Length: 401
Image 1 (cartoon, rainbow, N blue to C red):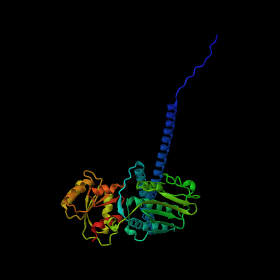
Image 2: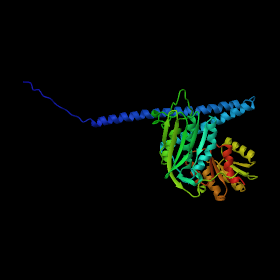
Image 3: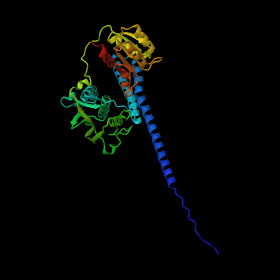
Image 4: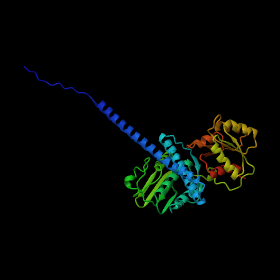
């Protein structure tokens, strides 16, 4: 007699399925991360090597003794342009690193934004003119009496990225930037008459390394980080970026922050110094351990303002030189030096004379470094690489009669 039966066995595999799903998701994230890293490195390589090629190439051309004055001037202009592009690339990667890590610091204060926008006009007017574009600045009446409480450096960078983007993608017409007052908010905007952005691309234009194809054979330079950086900075100061665009018409990028009214806004943001002349027989101590940087600074100061220069290669030597020469009028202080750094040297010299002007000149260029340097006792701050114009303007704040 045969007995027939069935045995049923059940096993709960819910956790196994969840684990498998988690592992699959983790794998996809890892692959996406690896892809992003590869893209990141490829972009760095391209955006650094391209201007370096211009710098090294035109430096070699300039070194030729049979070069005409016109060719030499053109080569110098191209070398300078390549140097600026390399510096902007480095700054952009530093900024996106801060945004990504959540380390972007915000230093709010009351200031009239109109002054910042005015100071940007000359530079971007020249850039626009190179493409036969008209740049227009819109400001309300009595703009110097209108203030906001935010980070002025971040506002400047945001507007700069938006204008750069507008110039890049506008071939004819105009670029208009400024702000308007809306109830309790101030709205900044940058409008262009460029070729616009397609609706299918609006969702990803703020992604890193995205360079939208806006026309046949349209090739643009740049890291593809500008709009992503602007968006990250706007969100960091509590705003939201908005974009309106139509193909063939143009684009408008805007963001808002709270408005405050200040009777005397000039006390928060100093106006441009009235032109004057440098004092005579200025004695300047330059604390700088890099010979190339020192000789560059010395050449500017001796030729332009006939200053007498003392040189210290570290902080300890700077302290000793000041003790031996109490008649020094001003000190240019590098921050990262051997033996004793610029922070400690500044504190020690300020103990000897709290009124001696000390200007930090350093390769540290992260947002927030200026506050650290000023809190150490320095009276001013310049980030390398420094131009002749910026160096003389900063020294002029203390040495113009």
